[in-house]
Amino acid sequence: MASQSSSRLLKLALPLVKTHGFTREALSRSVLTLPSNEQHAEPLSDSAITALFGRGDFARRTLIDAWLEDGLAHMASESSDANGGATPAKKATIRDVLRARLKYNEPVLAHLPDAFGLMASSGFHVVDPLPVLEHAARIADRACYTTGDRSLQLEWYAKRASVAAVYAAAELHQLTSPHTTYAFLDSLLDSTSNIKATLGEVGLYSEYVFKSWKGIIKSSGILPL
Figure (cartoon, rainbow, N blue to C red):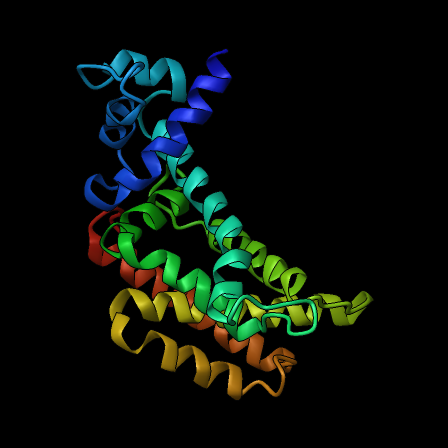
């Protein structure tokens, strides 16, 4: 029952991220958006948040994870709408799907550096690149799946590594220059020859991504890098 309650409140908290960020406050206010017959008069207490979602930043990480998962679910539906309700005869492209995922970021852009900083924090004031790599890899895998990619063996890994590097670079660009995000994404996709980038290109994007991530997190003041 507690698991069902927490899952439901997590979904209700997602729209609140726009105004309250990836915070325990967003989680506490989720009960205020329940149907009228279940709605609470007051936000959840801190002890209730801890009981449902965990102590301290663990609860925030739970909210971030739920938001990331919801973003994956939106990729196919939004890219299909953008492609005129793509039919099996007209599947969405990698460009469509990545654009849809970047669009999902737009309402919460101001809060993403803080979320990414928390994701990358190892607890020892060190930036751990694994979360950003996993985040981009999951998006690349979903993008390839949505577009019907049937690559095999080494080609499967190469294509997903390339898509992940392109998406991560575009997402970082979005944080600093949101108005040119889609033009930047297009330029990356157009330069990789059907997204089959060389290992050197993938390595270049990956280096750019990690250095940029560190800079954004440092400027946000989350970690004293």
